[in-house]
Amino acid sequence: MKNVQRPDWKDIVDKARAAFMGVALGDALGATTEFMTAREIKVQFGVHNQIIGKGWLYLKPGQVTDDTEMSVQMGRAIRNSGRWHLAAIADGFADWMKGRPVDIGATCARGIRNYIVHHSLEVPPSPWDAGNGALMRMVPVALYTLGDEECLDRYAVEQAHLTHNNPLSDAACIFFGRLVHNAVMGATLDQLRNLADDFVAQHPVFAYQPYPGNSSAYVADTVQTVFHFLFSTTTFEECLINTVNQGGDADTTGALAGMLAGALYGVRGLPKRWVKRLDPRVSSEVPGLAEYLVNHSPLSQAQDEFQF
Ligand code: MN
Ligand code: MN
Image (cartoon, rainbow, N blue to C red; front, side):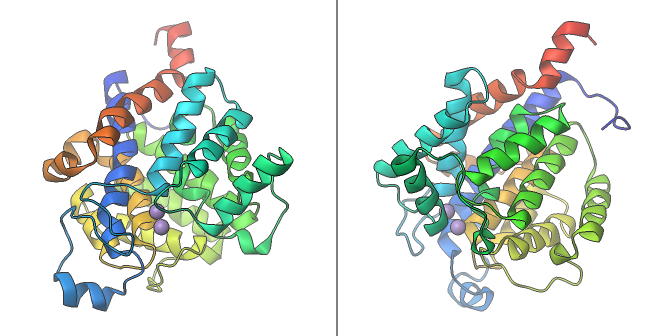
């Protein structure tokens, strides 16, 4: 990030808020087409571009799912603890699961049960844990570690291993955090693409050109899908619409595309008609939570100290 000119703090906060709102908007938009194929979506909707709820979970318009809810739980746990506190995050997940969420992934449920029963903060390594369930809740980690890449690496993996202990998931969690850091600090779409291409050179399983077209919950498919649509569009709205019309794990690819596109394009990129439709409990909490997280990040501490 040394090569990126340091933006005004208000711009950093704006992009942080848009990144977290992006998760919720992508989740709410994409849940409608989750588990559908692109062809089925085309037949039913033409282009799906409104937040209308329904889908296989029969959601209300604007309702969000586990992707947003787990992110919010983690953000609240950090804020309420006043520090990074993994057990508090696990407690938040446990409370959330006991509240019978509208959706929960099998790997997440197993990991949270592992915490409730054994008080364990890490599931054992598993080749079957290469789902996107740890990646989908990365936004609070990324915002809270702004300005400290080592901190990001550590927290990303710690939170991931509550439910998913797999090297592909770990690599994706860390790298998406890095993309959020760069975007919030003012990196352009081309700069993010260069970072992604370096990442793909190191981890060819995530290669997204030519786009293989799979949008399952397997983390490699998810990363390919998000990269493909982020780097082939130029607005938040276009990025999210194209992503969720691919179907598959559309709420999660939507949430992750929303996180990156939100961090890149900022609050003014968020379509007003979508923001209005979002569950008011979410839209009233998420921007403040995002602001808290960056205001307590290492970068913010450094700014206070040196007043740059
Ligand atoms: Mn979901
Ligand atoms: Mn999903």
